[in-house]
Amino acid sequence: MKAVVLEETRQIAVREVQDAQMRETTDVLLRLTSTAICGTDLHFYEGRMRGIEGGIIGHEPLGIVDEVGTAVRNVKKGDRVTVPTHICCGFCAMCADGHTSACLTTNPGAAGAAYGYPNKGGYAGAQAQLLRVPLADANCLKLPGEPGDQWEDDFVLLADAFTTGYHATAIIDILPGDTVAVFGAGSVGLLAAYSARLRGAARVYVVDAIAERLEKAGELGAIPINFIEGDPVEQIRRAQAKWRSGPAFRQEAPLGGVTCAIDAIGFQARSKTDFSKEDPFWVMEAIAELINPAGRVAIIGVWPPKDPHAVEPASREGRLTVPWSKLFNKNASIIMGRDDDRRWNSKLRDMIITGAAKPSKVVTHRLPLDDAPSAFEKFDARQDGYIKVILKPD
Image (cartoon, rainbow, N blue to C red):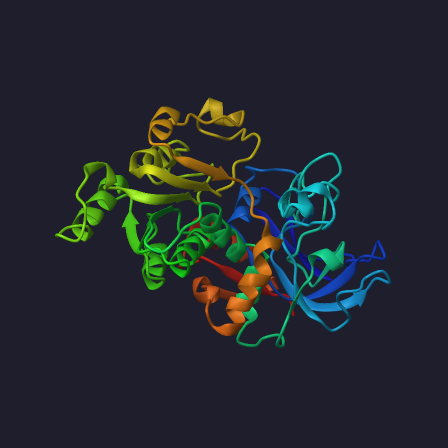
């Protein structure tokens, strides 16, 4: 089969590799019709999170079941399915509580497994023509329709991007009337903003510095904030002040920020003053400044255990200076971590089917699998409007 192989840092190749094979009676083989490139893949591509060099990359698959293990009961050959990025068993203590991203059996000795991801169980990635899906009954989400239909680009986002974006809004309970600041306008940040609107947020700000991403945020109903053009906290405060003017609003100064904030960037945040450099500190500092009293914060941007290439010594050891006193004195609530995809994907599937959600609005490029090397290069360089890329294996 053809597969996208991360050979070494910034070296992607499409290779003929051994076909994915069944290993257990609980497996299925999935013939992929779409597979997406995620911003997290760039951390591996850039060598910032190592461990899958020489292997297949990717963790956002959609396809048709091609072969079924004898112990599988919930799916059959020919079913259209997607599977969560985070591989789960469905029966361990974490899965039973709904925390499938921290499954205790799929990566023995650790909590959590994933396709094409370092230190997550050694499972082959999903940017290929075939994918082995372990524990298929727990992981396969059955879908209506046929390959290439009106839902193709929506359904592939159920593997990760849409579920992660929605997860950020759910864990901090974004409700009608909330005001939200999302830092980072990659596909996950954009889908977090989109999900906040789905949940009734009155105003959603999206902070980034790339014109195409900010334009896309505006298309989704958010207010774009370019952090290179000025302090994003002050920009949002000014916008909030204009919106909250008049006799219908209370004017207490401490309420000049937002009720909710989402960090969708993580450890590779770009500097506010020089986009060519990294600054892992400013996003949390901005959130601590901007959040209203009793505000809620979700951190979904990736933070690895260690980052040898970090610009700050503390970050190289997985530590970050955080303005805890400001957050504490505001009674802020902070929830962070990976999304429990299985908790959300069937609900979001149904929203797609009924037309209540259209996450494929963030998709900018649909390319053959053979174009993966150039797609990674342009995506990494933020060139030509590359925001969300879907590869077509056949």
